[in-house]
Length: 252
Image (cartoon, rainbow, N blue to C red):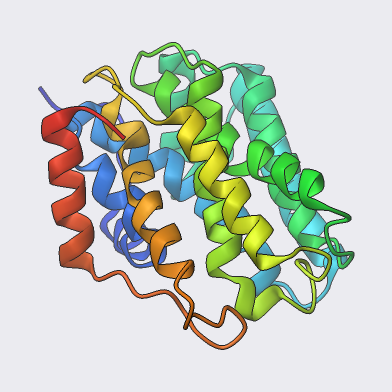
């Protein structure tokens, strides 16, 4: 049976390069689930790259407002503006019954990236991870027909905090200025330990990439790892093997 909505090849290739871990995990689903997850992740990528493709915050806010208006069109049954992502996104969101406020919250969370002020403390960073990666994972589970719970969000938070730790070298004197690296890693570890365990096979592709968190944290916890000058290394073959093991066990 043909899938009802899918990305064009160019957009799909861009997503594969920009967000390889979510992309790889999405391929573990059936055809419809795979395409739905890739549409969602392509939408998220559009939101996350706004600060990198705009020269000033006001222009970034205009882009986020464009997406807020597109989402409003989707949920009020208006004609949705044609775009390589908004068009398949509208079909997917309507079919999978994703609550609108989840999508609005994700946009608002990503819009925080335009704020030049650093996170005030670790709680602020955790709140950010919850509203971005946690919210994204909640939507992903819903698209596969699952019922997201607090463990779902915690898994997303673990991924989000791990991402902040991985980017510490770039942001340590800006967004992460007030955060201690070791404390950030420990917060990510605590979130992961809260979320890890058996996952229903039907929603596993939406959360599978969380299984990569322990190895990232382990490598960033080595005594010779300097987060301000080094990037954590985790090769694609090693990641693929870890996802396969996680898929067989059904655990993240």
